[in-house]
Image (tube, rainbow, N blue to C red):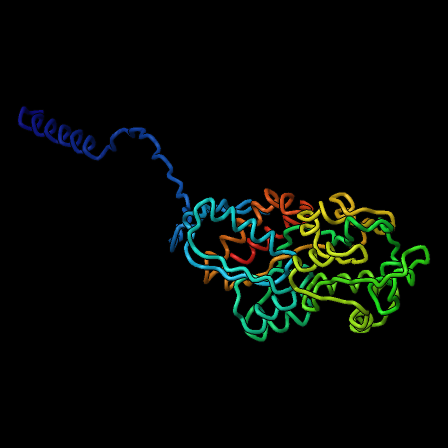
Length: 355
């Protein structure tokens, strides 16, 4: 083979090697696997129109600073609840309230009329629970009664300290004393004086009058209607009625043959001149009133309306203050605290009304 042919063959072989090298894939390089990212769904945040206050613990009310409360308040009703309302309002004013609270002592029935019929008042004071007729009257003028139990009373049946023949009465004797069945004390009990019974009782608008007639006369005697029982009372001789319990106190003080009844607070204030009788051997006291052993014990209330409490924050503030502080003064006034359960329910009623 000549030298030219050998050179040509070497060129061809060299080109083949180069072409093969170019077509051979590069050796694989191991790459790290990509990190897997998992999408987490994030709940959208709802916009809040305005910040909300922390919820008040159930059954408890906010503390009220009376110095920040503005606006006047009008309450009317029970003469029994009157001194309790007056005492709480006194605290309200001592702690900085500079508005005016008008309180009228006109009897529970008249108080409900002023709240539910004419719509004049912000609060109704009552020594009896609201009747269906009271609720209907309120609804007719766009109001709905909200009830607040504030205490317990034991109606005191009282005689003058000069009375020397009477310390206890039976239920039967009590009914005879305060109805037209008897004119003289001896008509009730032959051992008592043959002297006229001088009767001093709350007026017919009074919740005390209504409660007493129902409890001491209608139910024990099995009288069909309350009106029939009231008729027996109102036909009694030597009867003086008054919506002012102080008038009744003075009347009983004036004669050893007088007898009357009213809220325990009024007896407390005149206990140096009056004697509170036991009924069926049970004397009025916190224990006997709370247990119901004393037959003339009863609850005390104030009432308002949710819309009034919203439109007039001063009313809501006074009621909250009342419920928070009533037990600070109720003993001094002469009544007994409501049970813890009843007071808690009243506070919950406030919370529900002010939502």
